[in-house]
Amino acid sequence: MLAGLLVAEMVATRGKSLSVQLKELFAKVGSFYPIRENFRLTQAAMVAFTEKLKANPAELSGRKVVQVVRTDGLKLILADGSWVCYRLSGTEPVVRAYTEARSEQDVEMLSEAAKKFVLQ
Image 1: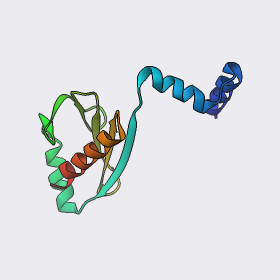
Image 2: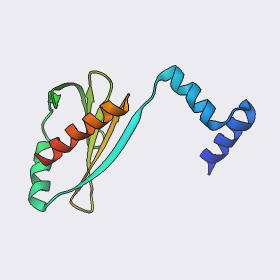
Image 3: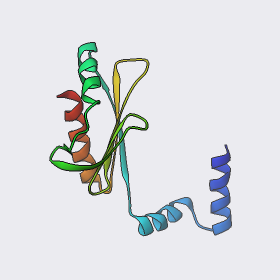
């Protein structure tokens, strides 16, 4: 509720619609395109993927991994700032993959690489 009130205050104070404010923000910092996907796995595939998560990959689909973050799953940050984060569900045999990149084309390619990483 508070977030909604803050957004309403931004619109009222600045006298600009939210869409105009977002366009101005993206002009300053660039755009980001996120994707969230769920992959339902068999129990055997889940065990195999859990083992795969213990490694620190040096690359993802030919793209260099510059940082590995394990705060909340396995997050692979790539050289261009795009990233993929894998999180296991605690209640079902599901892997969630969160992907973010600076262009729609790049996020689609990265999403495909994230899927291959889970399923191979």
